[in-house]
Image 1 (cartoon, rainbow, N blue to C red):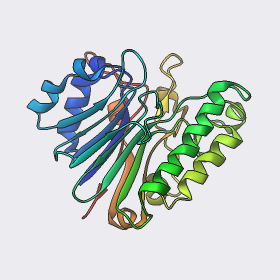
Image 2 (tube, rainbow, N blue to C red):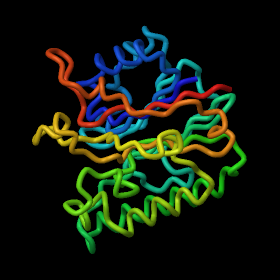
Image 3 (cartoon, rainbow, N blue to C red):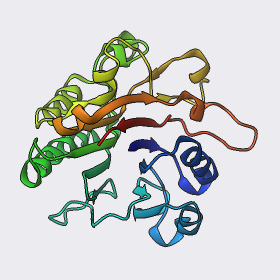
Length: 258
């Protein structure tokens, strides 16, 4: 089984690239972030033609998450179960063999701003959600764009990024607190010393200079860590193409032997 996460930065612009990638990579389940479209305008038919069912939690122009899978989920929860506004940033899909939580964590802002506080709150609430609904012994995947680089090896220049949104100490602490639920960073578990990034600024041509951040993750509980045989970042999907414009993010994928 292959599961992936990808911030597509507008699915209506990017869906031909996404569909091509899904077919070439034989991905079974894809969590997407920043789809930037309402559910009724999402390109459902294009995905159905290629064998994917898509559960969509979106809005016009901003944010939005979706789960596309060959297997139809048994149940889908859009947003927080308590009904609190989530800015269309979380969707949970229950499958036969595992549950997938797909999130788009707020980018945040400078220290002391409302957006910075909301980012910390979102990560804290996410852990509460996991603790109230799951156990570390459950086969659980939590993936998405977390907008936080975990450590210095996940940043092309830790000195430049120190104190900036995406690499603040309290953001990193909040992310590690989330992992303390019983989640493992599959990329780092499978690639302890490798420096690869999942986001590259388009305007500065950062991809060609390998100047990025690793902020997109596939986290999993121990049962799926044991079943994971590979986790990597697909740089091919991030390369420029004449007709298919890439996102500023590269997809992260994990393969499991269940």
